[in-house]
Length: 261
Ligand SMILES: NC(=O)c1ccc[n+]([C@@H]2O[C@H](COP(=O)([O-])OP(=O)(O)OC[C@H]3O[C@@H](n4cnc5c(N)ncnc54)[C@H](O)[C@@H]3O)[C@@H](O)[C@H]2O)c1
Image (cartoon, rainbow, N blue to C red; front, top):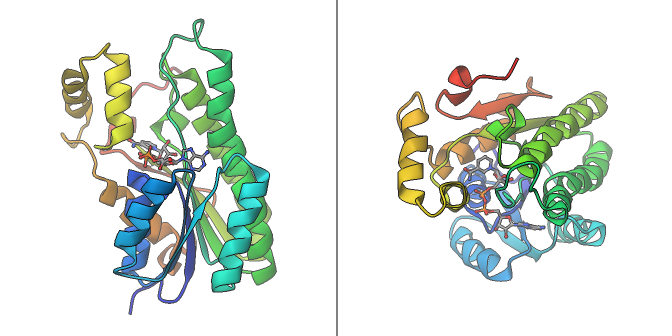
């Protein structure tokens, strides 16, 4: 029997690579899954695969809309009756541009998903977990939660904000038996990293990916499953004494990256 047997987990951004990997890890430990994404085709594809392992509810929702967030929380409660684990993961990378050239509408778009979306998910799921007097939450930060990036001000700012949301929520919910942590993935071998590498190198994506790989102390990019297993651990009782933490999953990158101080 898995450590998440019969627990109910919501994963937002479940149509994407890291969210799906976390959902697979949770399902592998016995959890029933509510998979949330704004992309119906991505959701359908991943939910179909997950159904081979566990019971799955798919909800098409935009995490930046409060109505949609209330909708996925209500749909999960209707179907499963409770929420034990929440991976508040949907996020977008935004465009790459220098700070002075950064488009203001693009800045707002990134904030709407990566900050408002994470806030709304916390607000509505925490209400349920507070009543249950149990639950665990993992928000998706990034190594960009710890460092500036020079050409992704919206993403870096939004991921710094994820740490603020995590710490505030952890402090608020600790007396109610609910834990809240963040993960900080580094250079994972995913669509998001390939898009950023392509954008920032002016189309020389392969060379840029190789440069990123060679910067990692462990000498390789990370895989989505290496994030999924940490998320499942943090959402399980194995992590019962961890709250308010931001766990890097980055092959040692932060050990060697300057912090500007
Ligand atoms: N891939 C990486 O290298 C990396 C590194 C550090 C952090 N992260 C973070 O991990 C999370 C997942 O990244 P990923 O690589 O799986 O990205 P991805 O693009 O593969 O998946 C993100 C998913 O979120 C969905 N989404 C986007 N906006 C949404 C919205 N408004 N409402 C609902 N769903 C929405 C997308 O449709 C997509 O399916 C993000 O928060 C990202 O910032 C990723």
